Length: 234
Image (cartoon, rainbow, N blue to C red; front, side):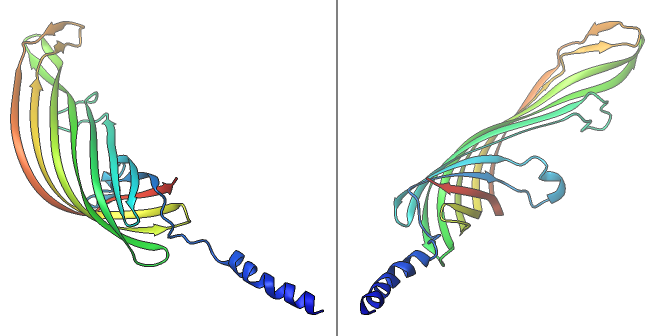
């Protein structure tokens, strides 16, 4: 009987250890994540096409990490964006941005941590408007199309502050706020090369009308919710 009691007492520490919940604060050296950048202004319309991104993060110390992000977006609307535009007009937009950064992490609780740091990045984007309009001359009514293009190149510095919540040992949800300082070089092109098409089938080439405007913009913005995401520890 004494031997049975001793055996039971000896197994109690092992049973207790087996029942200890998994520590969700575990930090993995490599992490992959998906991000989305919601727009707070015009929330229900602007978020139909979100900039989506990939995140890679590598722990270099228990509470420090380097990270890299790639963010892109593409959208197209077949609509008339300008007064007087006709059906057949379209608006296309794409962008691609890359960032590298460094962050420090502070554990707030078993499941929650605060992190902060900064990242630098660069990106390009382009918006194209295919504008179909109507007109009238001595040959009658006609349709005329033109192309407007806006191209941008940007460099950016972004201090950030975020919070991360562990859903499981490997999976974390996070959101962060940033103060963005950026320089943007923008070029707007107008290409009026096209044709006039009349109802009787007559097609007349138009003259070439080309113009462009360059602009430089410095901007500082605070974005309360710059991005939200999900990461997975490897």
